[in-house]
Picture 1 (cartoon, rainbow, N blue to C red):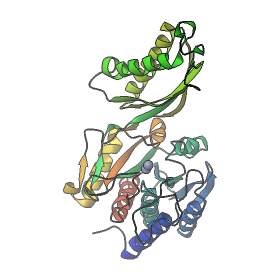
Picture 2 (cartoon, rainbow, N blue to C red):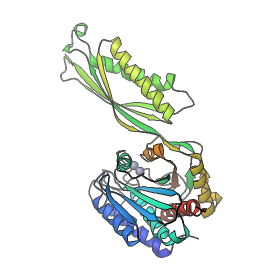
Picture 3 (cartoon, protein in one colour):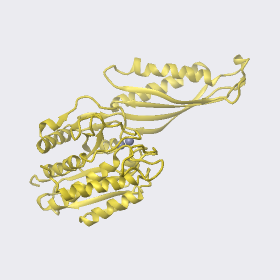
Picture 4 (spheres, helix red, strand yellow):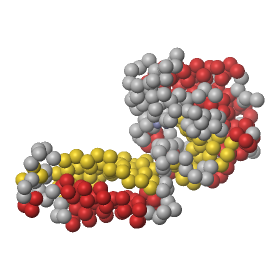
Length: 386
Ligand SMILES: [Zn+2]
Ligand SMILES: [Zn+2]
């Protein structure tokens, strides 16, 4: 039996499809933000708008002392041209909700409507965070910078997951998604004639040495019991067929399975780059241009998620997970660096196209499951005697 009325589910479904038809990219979620705000105002929420640009923090204050719990949904879409052929497919060429943030937003609104009705039976406060720009890993940090976590004790959010049974709720304590760090490296050597490398310092040769040696960070420095990836995603240098260039640049992308692994990979990577450059007489500059930590869930909140899901949907429809389902990153990690909480997963079906695929679609069946989780968590955590 669903927590929600059929009307409420139908409204959330139509909101999800409306958002799907009109996707907006990072920090440009204007119409999305307006739609979210209109719904929340109609249901009696106090709103702070323009948080981190297009973000919203909505508060439901029961007027009674108690905990303050935060629920977060991301609102942005991706620069992908949709190929689903759905009747409500994107009407904006080259933009698409290929990660299901349309569904995340609609399910939090579904919960919001119900919580507004429930609030007389609850204590404390609920804060809903509608966040821009998750896809570039910048929205959560900007929301925090703008005070979105002020007063929040505990925070929850979720992501749909292709490959898992439709509507199945899964949560993992500790690291649950990978960290993602991006470095830009500039190698400065000495340009010269291709026929006289002895008179030059060849930054392409030095870069090749760095690329080879970097894999030792994972294979020889990181514990085999930890997860990590080092990938050189760009390597640029050279202007002519017979010229040794003076400079070359590369981009290195690392993934880590825990904050400890991230620290080790960072230190060892810097050592390799500096030492290889030094060995060949080149200069190097290394800049970290993006850091998204791994998603680290706290144990109590993770247990609370699994218990809530089992109570609501039966033990066959919820489980604890013991291995990370992905090394992909998620900027919810920034909230979890500051507050205890849990980022859980809801299965989008075993046959679902993967995230960021032009044929991906968020399954509407998830809306009452994820929405139900937010309502269930609020009832569990805010019904205790203050
Ligand atoms: Zn995504
Ligand atoms: Zn996503």
